[in-house]
Length: 298
Image (cartoon, rainbow, N blue to C red; front, side, top):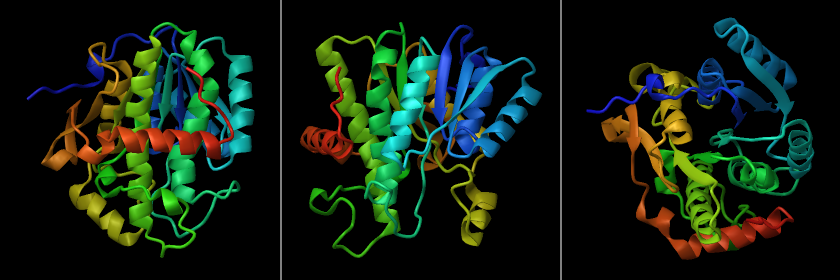
């Protein structure tokens, strides 16, 4: 069986990679690897103290690495707008945008913009961010967008009549699945639009399998992690392959090879049939533009 590892990643010198949620888990592991490969890595984080700690840890592992910390709260469209302006002003290229940050099965809450927290953070925040950074990606040769989804997309079936759970009894797992299938609808619809426009920007997706990350905080999850989970480093490999594999094609989806996609080295995998429904993806795109008060211009 093929074993794709960090040894397969080409030199990243001269490239700029932006990773959301890069202070911990698979985002941190991906940032550390890309920094070691020579990329200028932007850690997009909610908490500056945690971001600076992550930067220090990377520099300890990779002395002399180029690492920046920028503040981004994906649960706030204002923060997304402020962050995007900073990035466009400070950087003249963006080779990799890795939409990694996410929250998983929290109690019911809404973002400051009135979105159900998981859909707002995991999908709508990244949708708005990608739209605002797209001009920078478009002018950067060989640029790529990676959206990090999950096997939980199999639970997803977006209810457009009650997207933010205003009338239904809240199901944290169902809402999480909705946000993760939204990541894939976004990936595949963006890929179709990029192709139709003749854009050279590539979009791919990945999922980490079952990886031990900071998202799993309960005692039960911690026990399951000890028994079944792979490391955050292994969980980051699908993201890294989606970001750097020279043979990747637009719309490719990468995940672990073994144990029903829970563990193992990354390969191309297939998401479920619903995630490829073009009508749902187009509707989600239209709704996402309306909710984020912007047009995604390609």
